[in-house]
Image (cartoon, rainbow, N blue to C red):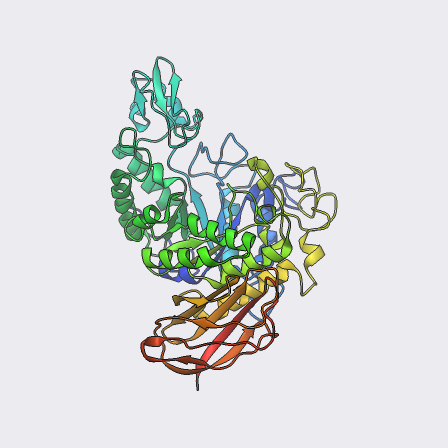
Length: 527
């Protein structure tokens, strides 16, 4: 292992990522640079991203016109023959359309000045078939051959979603779970493991990246026809996680395990620091769609029991799914309720770029990865040239500039919710109790963390105002009478909260309506 090379700026430890709000960025679609060799080509790049960092977080906690995100996750930034970059040809280089390694080092330094950590996509399940390793591996006598998976005959079985996984190459068959041009790496080969460790060392020690999002990790090692969540995969990742800790104890890992919660939770903490909680995301989106939080209450309780504290990514949708506003049929009230569910709940909060302004997009994938809508000009504030992909149809009316100065806009709500989450540690690190309510539209949580004031959050996912909210719970870590003060939702007044023996919450009442799709946050202090 290479020794840690300090960037001169302090990085977060893995446990500190529990407090972070992570903003997912597709560099190609975020911002084309205004000057320099990459300017005006219609493709977002790293210098362009640097120019927009103050929108994400300007580093000044007294200002309110930035989002307040504290980490960014960059979709693949490496050379690749595809627009999306998930088939890599060089793991230690930057896609020349995006810039250079020096540009990336500048990005890391500028982010760190603003309190933003940098996470990159680590795509190791497969490479591109244009990768030099695979080109060499086409020769049966090459030492690279065993870095991939081959069969003399077609085994005949298919993948988890009934896709073809064995592809003819010459007189043999190559295994590629996702696509014939994305050959899977053979993680039973010690050279592959060594190469992955060197790649991680390069990005974390030499460049200063402190977050790794591992793509498609449930598929790393197949056991015959079993192609996801195998014991071999968990063992390899356990060794990988220990190596990362030895290499750089400040690096945080999160894995894409698109599986039921019970399977995803098996990876945490021994194989990953966290995994993305896809079933919880679906439950939040369904609550916002239906106006009924009943299933979400059950799902939240289940997830809390399955994972260690902060052991999962909480999100609504990502780059592989229809955008939130499209899923909600353009109904902004529902998008506001979804945002409140995201930022008031436990787990590490992740936001896909553009969700804060309600960008629309539905499959195919190119249409959920369109350029960021900064303003209503022809180039959208994204580029002075022709954008690599057309903007969404409502781009001129739904942009950052159109919403920037309205306190009632969706982006203002995102800024406000992030500010509250960043301010109150109980909202990010707190122990969570899901509160009961006889109104199906109400979703309420009690959050408490040692050394910090407890917080109650209440979200109305319904289309009608609620005149009164009665909340109960069988147990919590609190006892006695607490004064309830509003920190978000000034329209909302409460009585004191009474916690009896065993931490039973007697009631919390409001005597003015909680608006449709409204959210209120209360801090508790002892009387």
